[in-house]
Image (cartoon, rainbow, N blue to C red):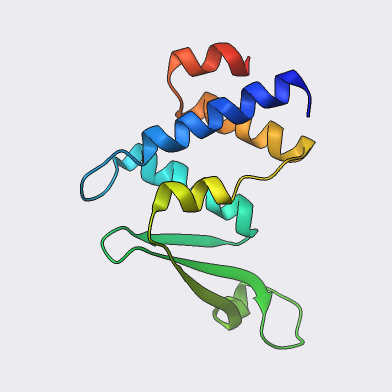
Length: 122
């Protein structure tokens, strides 16, 4: 992994840690960050996080029948739930290496991170 990618990954880990520093649930800003990151990781249409019950519900675009996916059969898509004990550890476990991932993390750092994190991601 290049030095630039390592810097992005470290900044992204800091962003995850910062976003998981909450009592009952994070700010709306960080809730959006969590959902956007998990949508990318799971490659799904929708993510809902229940911070009280510690569960993540995802809706996949892959229908459960052989018909092509359209907006008319969106209810036939697959829904699944993932339970977690520690959100920060779960999000960190979703990080992957790769050029596409690195570019996406950099974009999320710019969108949801603080100015000091942007210095490394620029």
